[in-house]
View 1: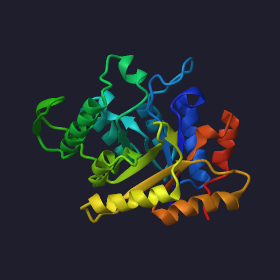
View 2: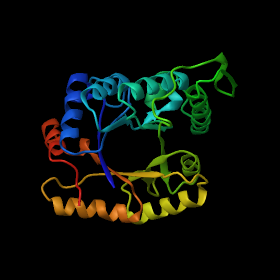
View 3: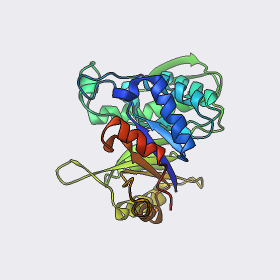
View 4: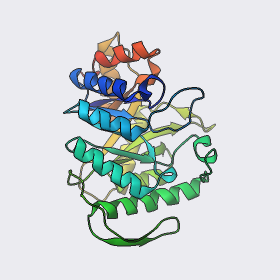
Amino acid sequence: MKFAIDLPNFGSFADARVTAEIAREAEGAGWDAVWLWDHVWRDEGVPYGDPWILLAAMALATSRVRIGPMITPLPRRRPWIVAREAVTIDHLSGGRLTLGLGLGAPAKEFTGFGEEWDAKVRAAKLDEGLEVMARCWSGERFSFSGEHYKLADVQFLPRPLQPHIPIWTASTWPVRAPFRRAARLDGTWPLRRDADGLSAPLSPDDVRGIAALIAEMRTSPEPFDILVAGVTPADDPARAADICAGFADAGATWWTERIDSHGTFERQRERIRKGPPRP
């Protein structure tokens, strides 16, 4: 299992210099990746930083950790712009980008700016956007005509530095459709919804079910990543390691520490400095 932290792109983390410094500290503390949220207006009265500019600062401040947005809502962005930004970060970081994509939330980040919130429309835009991005990254001249996006005789260079930029998509357990999409790609960040539609923590049994479903749906022989996000006790390393080991045994390949759940900014930063909950 590998270990990551995820940082909001707002509040104290909106400052690119601060976020870059934290990413450098995380690398020194032994984390394997630093992920970044992508929101434009989630919480009231706080500053926001553009996630791609923050990622550029993180790329220049580090040399080993993987970086990437978790999760960029592709339906409220233009896929050819995301393709260009992703390739630029991939080159800038020396091939360390992992790209997280999803439908997006909350609703006001769509409706507040005149974007479509209907789930079926967002899903269709995500699927079209994935195809557009793959064509952009091919380096070949192409045209595309879909329900939502149309490109005419375009070519994008350079190609990604990595032979293949890993794409992980958000999914909701136990809904099957998002996992069908994820199974065609490289990984997934699953959430769980309870009977009332509210977010609930994943259990190791949930992860076993997810791993079995991916194995059923997946046709590629390439490895597939399952990311679990949660909170471990910073003052009890043995307990923290046990929590992660249970998910690793169930099939999770990444643990992401929810830094936003560790209280104040200083406490969040202290948790990062203590390093990952390795066995």
